[in-house]
Each structure stands twice: as C-alpha cells, then as structure tokens.
Image (cartoon, rainbow, N blue to C red; front, side):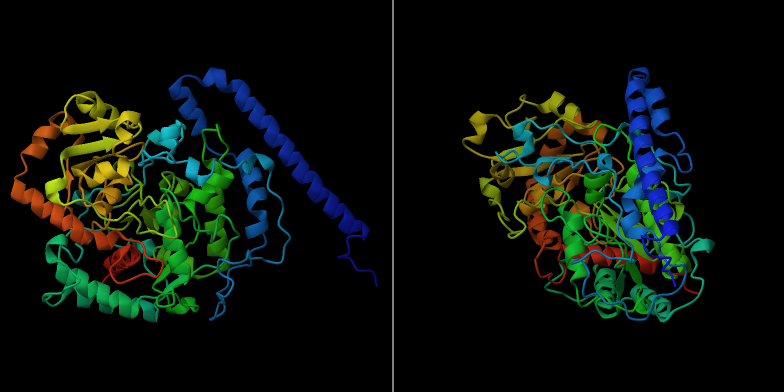
Length: 567
C-alpha cells in the first residue's frame, strides 16, 4: 500500500512544490510592492496624502496579510478547532522552548526580519546623559510612525466624566461590562470576584499599618483589603502558545524593561499562576510589544500594519483554539506593553482593543485607546543593570539639594521644545538642557543632577509617558509631570498629589513661579513622601510585598473586580 503522506509520492510532491511556489510568489510580490511604494514616495510628500495612503484599508490577502501570515505560520498555523483545553496544561516548558503544533515553521520573509538597533541603542525617551546613553552618542530618537499622530476612535467614552452609572470602589466612575462582555457561562472564579467586590466595598477602616503610609493612597482601607484578597484569591492562567522571541522573551534592560520584568516574574510565579484555566480570574497574553517592533517592523516603512496583523492573528488563534476568550470576549484577558506602539497594535482586533485590560506605559486618554477605569497605566522604568535593579537608588538630603529644577534630554514631542525655549540656559535655578554640556558632566553627571535637585522636570516626549517620573522617585527628587491627558501609574490606588507636582502644558512659561510658590514645609512633605512611595516602584529579582510587580498585578486585579456586576 503506497504511503500518500510520503514526500516521494507524486501527489504529495505536487502539493509540496505548490506550497513552495506560493511562498516564492508571495515574496516576489512583496518586494515588487515595496519597490512601488518607494517609487511613489516622492508623490506622497504631502502629509495628508501620505497619511491617507498609510491608513488605507488592508486588502484581503494583500501584501501585508501574505507576508505576516508567512511570518507567523510557524507559530499559529493549524490551530485546532474550538474546544476547551485539558484541565491541566503543563507549564514546565514555559519561556524555555518554542511551542509547536506539530508543523515545521516556515521561514519568514527576510524584509520582516531586519533587526532594529539593539535595545541599548534604541531609546524612545532617553533619560540618561551618561557616556553609554544614546543621546550622548547622537543617535536619532525612535518616535511613532507618522500616522500614529491621529487618534484611533474606540467608540467608547475615555474620560471618567463621560461615564454614567456605576462608580468604582474608590468613588470614581468606571466602565461597566457591556452586554456582549458578560460571561457566557458562570465559573467559580466569577463567584469569587463577586465576593471580593462586596468585601472591598465594605472594607474595614485600616488601622495603622507600618507597610502602608495612608497619605500616599486615595483610600488606604480599600487598597489594603483589595490587596489582601488578591493575595488570597487571584489565579492567573498564562497561554503557553507562541514562539520566541515575540512570546515568552522578557527584555530586562532599557526603557521597555517594565513589560519584560513583569513577564519574567509573572511566568515564574508560583503564588498566582495556575495550570488549570478553569480556576483563573485573569488570562495573561505573554507577548512583548518591544519584540513585535524589533522583529516585524520594516525600518522606514512608516506603517505598523505587520505588527497589528500579527497580533490579530494571534488573538484569532487563541479564540479558535480555546473557549476562554469567547466566554467574556476577552474581558478577563490582559497584556502588558511599554513600547509607545503598544496601544496601536490592537487596532485590527475590536475585542482586543475594546474589551481586554490593556496595561500600557502609553496611557493617553486623548487618543481613544486607553480607557480609564478599565485599562492600567504601567510605570516606565529605565534599567541599566538587570542584575542590580536597585543600583544607585537614593539621593541627597534636602539641605544638599542646591538645584531648583533639572531636565536634560532630546527635544522631541510638543512640550520639550517649549520648555527649552523658556528655560534653556536662561536661569541659574532652572537647569534645563537639550543635552548636558561636557563642561558640566565633568563635575556632575545626569544621575548626580537628579540626586541634587529639588524638582525633576518630567515632560512628555513623543508620547505622554516618560521614564523620568520613576527615575525621579528612585533618586528622591520630586517629579514635576508635564503631560496633559496622561493617566499616572497606579492611578487607581495612589494619590499622586502627595508626592508629585502636575503642571498643565500651557503653564510651562510660569514653571519657576509655580515651583517657588510651593511653601518650604509642603516641599519637605512632598520629598519625604517620594522616599516613602519609592518601594512601590522597585523591581526585585524575587518580588516582595507591595513592590512594583505586585502593584501592577493589583491594578489588573482591581480593574477586573470593578467590572463585575453585583446582582
């Protein structure tokens, strides 16, 4: 009996050659289309025409679809039809080997695998003015693709003042679950969430807790009770699907370190992670927005469509293979992204964009992507030494902070050029630089400036987020945040007015006046509170209670509990 599956069989050989031919044709079409795009570039110099071209609808099976399908074929092709997974999903290989569906991966077209500069040479919002920092080397910044300047409408209210109805457990309006997000069937985890919400609403008044300083919190009683219940109840299921490097590959250095450190600590966690998805309150989608950019973005193409298609295909595979996404339309799923492009990579999948809990450094209310009351603002932490994440923590006492205000960095975005215009090299008290001059760095480098300043200016760059906010906290300098529409990290729990100053963008010309108007006693309180809040922003190789890992996870938990309807 002949073996029809053998490559030597004529029909199998024809099928094999057909597949190879299709791939070659797709690659040739891609190169030709890319060449046509380059030829048309001079005609697209007008910004409005170029934006319209870049935002054109994707044709079914068109260039980007074909190429990205090929790029992800090895990871996702052949996903099984909808069926629940076994109760126990082994996690022993999580983050160690590529997940396989029994299909040999197809090499991706080379133009999608052109590597970006290494992480150490590619900072969006460079914060260090030391020799190893790219701003000192003169490398160009990496901002968003041009079309990302326009907001992507989500069809949902984005400001809390626009939301009517329910309020969260801190009294702020929130987005309730829409009818299509209501679970198709109930689980024991749903009942635990209802129990948790009732407990948090009726939280007892917190007595003096040596680990929690009440003025730092919006409501310390609610936070404490919610955190206790998270420790006791929360279970997270991590999808093991997806091949490295985009999945299960944490990047622990640079300005995207937040998403990498969370991934590393989440996937190795033994307290919250469960192998049985039927017990889970939350489902983690373990992909890296930084690795998406690094592996799929074509330098100079001015489009992130390949990244968006990849993410869309991944979610479609998850929702086809498992039943858990479809139970809530993704409302109990979350992902963590610190790259500026993280929010925009969701644009081709409505349920991902509208329903999931998006944990984003780029927490901008004005663009219709980040939803206050549902999504989570992720602190952007710039780490140089992954093996020593607590290096250089601390700063000088108040009496030795001789600089009123300090900023040094690249002049990108809408705020920084205005800051430099009014304060650059114009006032001895306002040390505002586009780049620290050599004559100054010989005496005091970037970190020493932050440790010696009363206020550290944290203006937005290309996007609203900046690693300077957490840097200021690390070096015990009161952060001055200038970024309209920015939802500050851990906004659900922390009272930022207790340890920072928020200045509207329009008030940059009055910046010194605003800072000098703060009484000395109030400044001392602010600076003291910066030191107290510091522990909530620290990464530890082995997480400790109330540190940044637990604060991020708590914000996701708190968001999910808030969405639950109590009948």
